[in-house]
Length: 116
Image 1 (cartoon, rainbow, N blue to C red):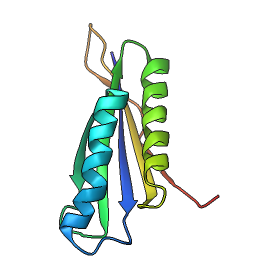
Image 2 (tube, rainbow, N blue to C red; image 1 turned 180 degrees about the vertical axis):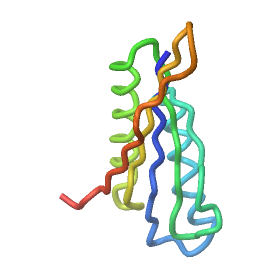
Image 3 (cartoon, one colour; image 1 turned 180 degrees about the horizontal axis):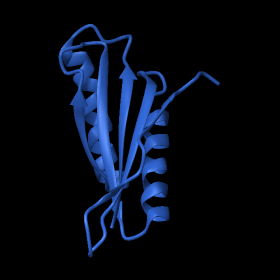
Image 4 (tube, rainbow, N blue to C red; image 1 turned 90 degrees about the vertical axis):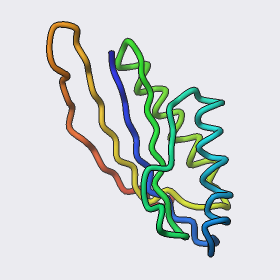
């Protein structure tokens, strides 16, 4: 079993209250869950009104499928945020769980998203 976990750090510059922030973050999390069938939640920066961290995870029997689902979800989030916010950072971690032993962890990768 392979799990790919992704943590997006999001800038929401037009948000000046928690209510405005929720108006961006809540629909994103719900759409990730319903359209892409990943586990998703607001995972950090709850005290900030102009930023958020949204985490999601994809689980599959093979690594290629889990990675593809996670990549699709990341692209979906970036597209959804156009005009609402911007992904500043993406942290990814892949976990492989084998039947005969302890989980094997791959290195966590962080990449800054640059404007194209």
